[in-house]
Length: 78
Image 1 (cartoon, helix red, strand yellow):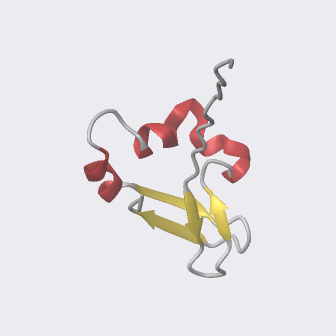
Image 2 (cartoon, helix red, strand yellow):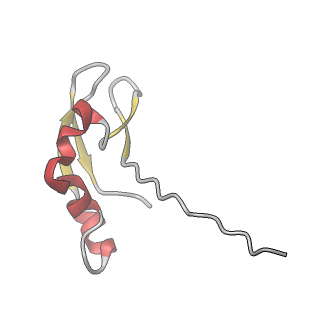
């Protein structure tokens, strides 16, 4: 019998629920992915080393794509 092989697929999302309108959106997809230009979000969300300290300190301010209010994102739960 031939050995079967499969390739894994890694999916990364940084989802936020707007506190004003409850819209659920992915920071990686926001504004066509511009927030992650040059790996900005990835470096902040998944840096080298111990992630727990970084996740507690994560901060970003974005406009909700639905209601356009400023959303202050603080921390990452994983």
